[in-house]
Image (cartoon, rainbow, N blue to C red; front, side):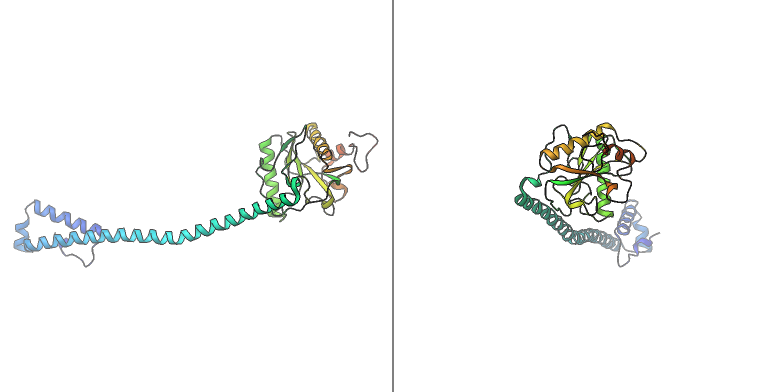
Length: 290
């Protein structure tokens, strides 16, 4: 019954607490006489009580000290890691800001995000949450060639859907193909909006062998089995007119489909059939639209 009085060399906090409580119960129930006669003197009980109490307190203090020590150790590890992480992030952001600043100094308004275009609903890179490019290569303007592509995959008819598609294409081009940015200068949705890709004056990655002296407009979707909506074709004409007006595209430019220079179906059979009637098409039929 009194095995708990055989105190070990080291008490856990719980063991010490339990033993202390049991002694209090024995005292309250006046079992002291039994203890005195058979096992141990009351004075020794009191000493034992003090010992148990001090062991419990000591163990409790050790537990607190251990918790504090662990926290200090964790902080000692985390603080340098977090600091270095922020330092690397700061370096990256600084590099982006520095490149942007130098481009603006060297090339002036050629580095502006986008130019205003009448009759064109333009969605800038910021609005569709584009990633920053790894590198920017400027081209001589005005360009003499305009290429029309399709992106393949799904078409889009709402800005949120088109923005999501633009991000997916950019991720594929940058991470899958290891390109510096999304391939195209602009993308066109069947919501009638034009989405800024690399933008004006930037060398793209759209038509091998022709990137430095051309600009590319890509329609979201696949047009082998369906026709583009008239509102999307109108957006293409408006953005080309805007580029000509602002000196980005030569008034004597030549229009091509992607398939005219590369072995591909792009921009799709139905879209290609439409652009063949544009005024600047390289091999246009007699009837033309622009």
